[in-house]
Amino acid sequence: MKPMIKSPLQIARASYQPKVPKALKGYVVINEGEKTESADDQEEIKKLFPNTYGMPLLSFAEGEKKDYGPINVGVILSGGQAPGGHNVICGIFDGIKKLNPDSRLYGFLDGPIGLVEHKYKELTAEIIDEYRNTGGFDIIGSGRTKLETEEQFKKGAEICKKLNIQAIVIIGGDDSNTNACVLAEYYKQHNYDIQVIGCPKTIDGDLKNEMIEVSFGFDTACKVYSELIGNIQRDASSSKKYYHFIRLMGRSASHITLECALQSQPIIALISEEVEAKKLTLNDIVEDIVNVIVDRANHGLNYGTVLIPEGLIEFIPAMKKLIAELNDMLAHNDDFAALQSPEEQREYVKSKLTPDSLAIYRSLPKSIAHQLTLDRDPHGNVHVSSIETEKLLIDMVAKRLAQLKAVGKYNGKFSTINHFFGYEGRCAIPSNFDANYTYSLGITASILIAEGKTGYMAAVRNLTDPAEEWQAGGVPITMLMNMERRHGKMKPVIQKALVDLEGEPFKFFAKHREKWADPESDFIYPGPIQYFGPTEVCDQPTRTLLLEKGY
Image (cartoon, rainbow, N blue to C red; front, side, top):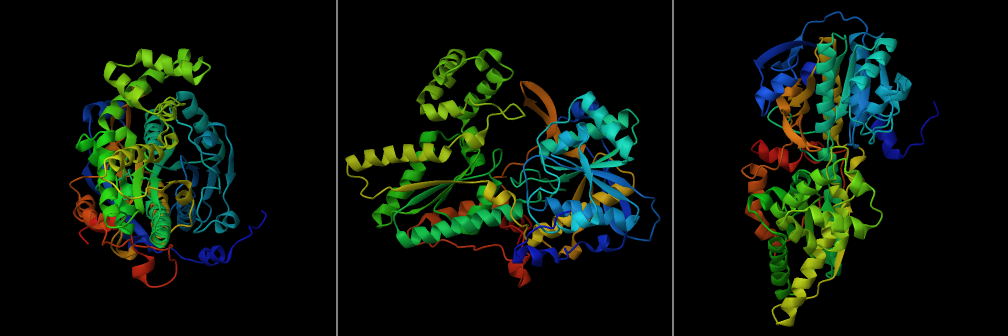
């Protein structure tokens, strides 16, 4: 293996030993808790997953040494990258080697497709040691192939039999862990001796519940974005001439935007879930932004930052209805796909929409309307990352301010710069929190495998306490599931966790946002992630998690 060229920070981070819960430092006994039910649609989920439904919650405690035979494990990185994925793999490797030094770990290449097409490599200590505490998914690559057909399941079973793999760990978000649940059920139903374990990954933060306190990568990504926002705010305070409209990742929930707002105190942060709850229109949102800008102009301030969640446009009720119609209309639509020009496509769409949605569609700039009809993602939904909502808002705000200026109600200057922060945070070197958390998840997965469990997601809780006091265990994946419409059909999927408008993080934000927009208020400049130094600087979890736990 060719050695990597490393920066001084990479070299220093390679020697960092992640902190883990006390129970994971020695040998473990598993305690079974209550039987579980799915998050919703219990009867439907139970019918679809008869062999893995209703399993108990699992918690780990310190136990006596046990003898385990060698275990061969396959690991898959699925979906978009998130900081800490490599440490999950390192934790699995160290975990199975501790249980039996003859255990072996195989990485399937480029995501789930590697399992289906039998593309893999054995992950040895030499390879693993090159990736400890690093960002990215490049150790084996990732992909978005969905595991949903019997042919795929059988192909996976073939390579597992060939390599004597007893268990597969799927490291991914809600859809990837839905795949894990489906795969576990199939192998159990057909008596394949293959276990399937999931790990909760997504920087979006929408894979969470009372048992999964946070998905890994969220902490690091939000700290990266908050640093960038803080840097922009420092520049805005220095030059005093730009409004920065910043779109942040998070298609289905606004957790990233909320967390970055808590860390940086922008003048405006839009929360999609609030927009939907209040049934706000695009014009309502524009008017709210305009009111803040006019007030600041009256105090001689013509700069600031506006945070916009990536999925905002889908939460505006009228837009949500339009997009739902488009998703159903364009699912497997050969007639639309055959049309050559954007204008032909536009006319086709207009001919199929209901009157209310047609009115909204016609009101949009052609560039935004076109973006709404681009190719769907693997789940049949619009690619919200391709919709430049920040530019739409800039355009609408500028027009409204021009109207106010014409009648003498606005005397400021509106110069703007737009940004989209996404990939900048997905492969960052993981924070100490994420390095510790992901390594603990990996060890937890190895224990679940050794104990013969399947259909479980590795879980580590009490994350606001010192790492030694964290609690590890397993959550049945069926516990997280409900039924949702995908490609025009109802499908079992893990329920996304949206921002809770009654939760402490949002209530804190709502209480303070007017003060942050006030001309007398100051921005916060979070600065870069710190890896070395006092615990209160280096090891803190997100503000969201602290507020949820009452800190």
